[in-house]
Length: 194
Picture 1 (tube, rainbow, N blue to C red):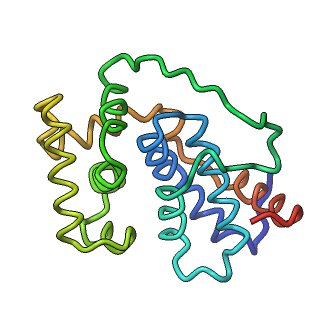
Picture 2: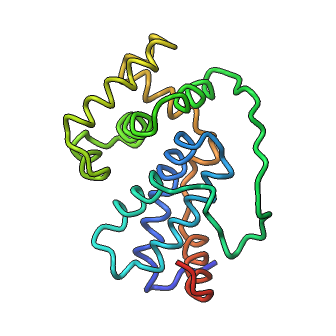
């Protein structure tokens, strides 16, 4: 699918940032399908509002971390009105960190994913989440302590970042050309959603 000249900046952003957005959503939600839906909806909405956004990248990341996956509806995907989710145990080393993240309070989970996985500095996380830097530092310390209590190697910044990267399925980390996100944004606009 060809991307029109007008959509090139958005396609570049979507292609470059989709893996980080998907990985962040997956680590926060613990479910690849819901993570994909959230990121699809967020990017389609960013495309629709592109010209009105001062910082589309920041907007996309903020919307991913604050999205309620239960309310995400994609007009281009036929889906049931409810979704049954198997609550079975997560197995294997890489996914265990996802299960451990799910045990953290939402703010702690979000700050540790944004810093250790997405690579944001504490000041960027504070600005994104409208928290003070001391609040971010405190939440990060608590999250790292809880994660380290389950697996002492996670106390190392390098080890935790590597474990989070490994936990994200490889297909969610793959870069794209952004063309599908452009098409989804156009569908959203045509249907008057967002």
